Structure formats: structure tokens, C-alpha cells
Image (cartoon, rainbow over all chains, first blue to last red; front, side, top):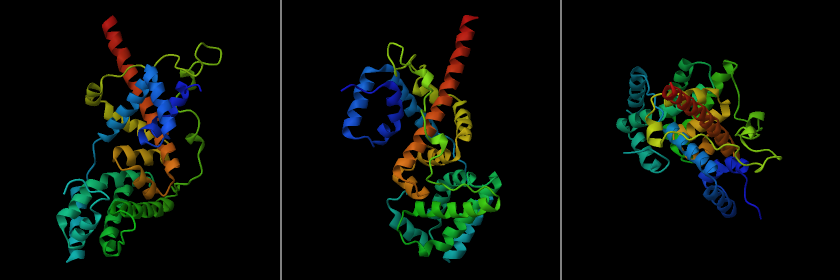
Length: 78
Length: 221
């Protein structure tokens, strides 16, 4: 049985990272990555992209809105 | 208290019902950003999205005693948000449901087919040239421009893809929870996430290749 081609492997990166491939599919992807620097680097770039997304700065509520909500919470729970 | 999640919901809900302001404040601080990003995909302005978030929290305060725990607290809060945002979006004529009908943008290759060799070439379907190397993760993540590149990439995504990647990767919520919040299937969620990530990666690749060219140009001068 022939292995996966690069243009197929790049479409499996998310399923691979999500752990949603079957055991056999996962083994085929791993075999391919072990032999293919291009795909290995493509997968590493996906991982880095995900890491960078997780580091985006968070916006917080405007202080006025936050205070108003805490006040509403207090009033409702009193 | 640490990270608030589906785990420990019972204790959290008990504290909120007991009027624990610190617990409520922590929820406001941890969830409002994700809620605002999501609301923004249903309504037309930043201000309108902020109002949706505010209205949602007020509904949460009112509804707390009725929360039955059939979903996680966070999922419940996000579903309230989506209902409020949709209602407002429809009055703003900007209603686009999270339909399960696959859109054209959700199929086809995510990497330009020209990157791979064709049938007449020595290794069909294999890279014509490997992806350009990026700076090391340590260096790349310190790049002050990276955040702006990512924000621009997110803005260009089709809306449903952006909704999913915001919840999954920007907020870090799990696949199951995101499916539950958006009421979509696991397969649909994965397709949207895959396409979104591939687009953001593509933007970063162009950015890093561009900065590499600039460095190269400086060196060669």
C-alpha cells in the first residue's frame, strides 16, 4: 500500500492535532512526517500559528460596564 | 479559584447563587473578551457588541437560579449571548445563522495546489519547494508585528471560520464545548477550524517570507 502524498497530509493536520484520526490514519501520517521535511515543517508552522493565536491580547470590559454589572449582581443577590 | 471551566461548575454556581462577587467578577474578566469577539460576528459595530455582552450578563444574573446544569455554565452563558446577538443582528439586518449547509469557502484545498508537483513531474503531489522556514518559535512569538498580522488574518476569514477559531484557539475552549455552544457537529467544527488555521498560517507565512526578503535585501546591499 502506498503512503500518503504531501497534498493529502497537509489536509490532515487539524484532524491529526485534534486526535480524531483512526489509529491506521495516524500511523500513515506519522510515517509520512518522519520521511518528509516539508510536511514536518508545515505541521510545526500550524502548531506555532495556534500558539500565536492563544497569545493575542484580551480586551477587558470597560470599568464602567464592569461596575454596573457588579452592582446589578449585588442588587439581584441581596 | 484558577481557570473557570466546565469542571467545578457546581461549586461555582453555588458561589454565584450565594452572591459571591469575587466569583462573578472573575467570570466577567475571563469570559467577556470571548463573548465580545463572538457578538461582534453577529452585529455591525463594536459598541453594539459591547451592549450585547452587557445585556447577556444581565440576563445571566436574572437567570442564575434557573440554570439547570444541562450544559456547562459557560456554554449556557454563550448560548444566551448568541440568542441576544442574533436578535439584535436581525434588527440590524445582519443575520447569518450558523447553518450546517457547507459554504463554497469550506471546501477545496487549503494549500495552493501550485505548491505541489503536477502529474508530469518527478514526484506528483509532493512539495515543489518546501515551505519557507520560519524564525524559531521563541523568536517568532516575540515578534511585535505578529499580533497585528493575526488580527488582520482573522478579519479576512469567512465569518463561521472566524467564530470557530476565536473560540478554539484564541480563547482556548475545547472542541466539544465549541460544538455545544454553536450547536454544530464535530466534523463541521473541525472543517471550519482547519480552514481557518490554514488561512492564518498562510498569512503568517507570507509575513515571515516578506521579512526574510527584507533581511536578505539588507544583507545584499
